[in-house]
Length: 182
Image 1 (cartoon, rainbow, N blue to C red):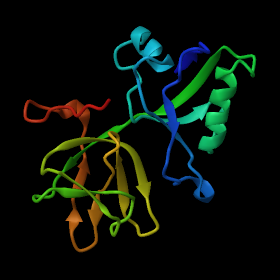
Image 2 (cartoon, rainbow, N blue to C red; image 1 turned 90 degrees about the horizontal axis):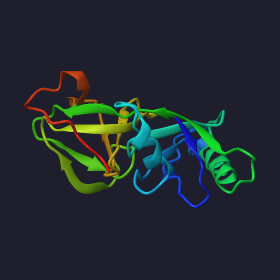
Image 3 (spheres, rainbow, N blue to C red; image 1 turned 135 degrees about the vertical axis):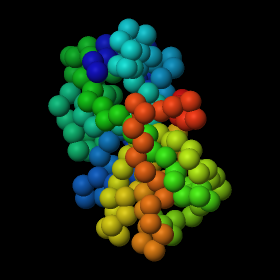
Image 4 (cartoon, helix red, strand yellow; image 1 turned 180 degrees about the horizontal axis):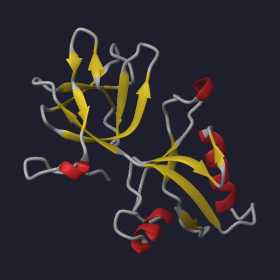
């Protein structure tokens, strides 16, 4: 994605608040808005399927990757006109669709830990959710960050088995509506 920059228009991105990158630093930025910003301008002109969605991960900006603070600094430098560039080249990682397969549903967590506090929300059995980040923790559990910002789920747990499975969006049928964000 290449964004033309207008100093008077916000970008619509934010730093990932959960440090799951190298050395405990946030490694990515998240698209936080697609309205009244440079990303909306891109989306108006983008081909179908090429639009940027809230919750997608920005993993690289102008060749810089691995540190969300450096990514944000590059965005701010370009946005202020300080770099001499009039555009940002962004590399995105798209969200994935997952389905809750646990009969009782699964409670959403605040952080990527089984013993984390609960948000008070539950993803129902067979509900489809967009996941913006998959994080394999040291406990061997794959945690799933919900793209809508509600919190974290996990795919399986020892002594429980699978609770969420990856769902191919191309196989969605009338019984499953595609989840949306933003």
